[in-house]
Length: 296
Ligand SMILES: [Zn+2]
Image (cartoon, helix red, strand yellow):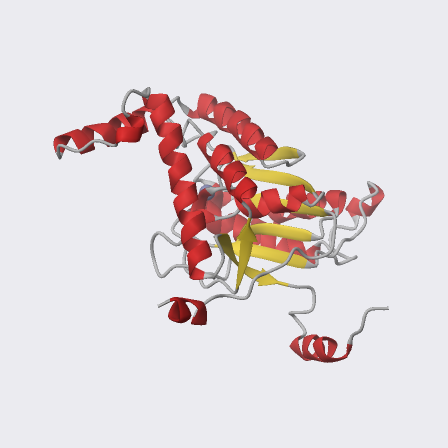
């Protein structure tokens, strides 16, 4: 059985060379949902990288407090969660959540190009625009804008007005992309990233910081009611408040998926990605380099 599992194990990705990464996302919580990227983010920051998070939408429809309150609560929770992961800060572009189809792609892309030229990331993390169909319109929109921005930020003739502001073209060398796996046909990853216990713990804490949409007392209450209806209890959450129980349950969720991805790939904890390095777009050169390049 173990041999069979390992026959399907993905190659393990090491962190690429560099010092700065950016996470280009639609939503406040995309750093830990879809089973990515909190562990990888923590791995980057523990290795001394600077990381910046971009929340493209305003998340107004995520939560029960009404549009303006949801926007600001989700932004604050995003700032707190990404801080736990060791990131430097969050940019909020404030586009209307779930209503992003009407934004000109070019405008969103230009914002991302500007931010890429400002921070000059060596690696970018985000949703995979070439993955299986994602029913979330914001995921599709931002994934496409981000993929285009990553390439176009390096082209001198694209938005030359940025140069007047002091932001020169910048080529992003490495991509780590994820996609939803809870519906459709899932995601075809090509690399696993091994995580340490500390990285999994940071991912758990960051995830459960999102109390407006995940670790809310209402979530735990609903779960308890369903269990009670079936005459079941979870001893570990007996005597805990709904808020405490909700945090524990969300942390178990992140622990479970990190172990599952680890077991599938021959390590204790992992996340999986579609990874692309700087020479993947020229496969002939890639093969030549693998055979012929030596370290000076
Ligand atoms: Zn999302």
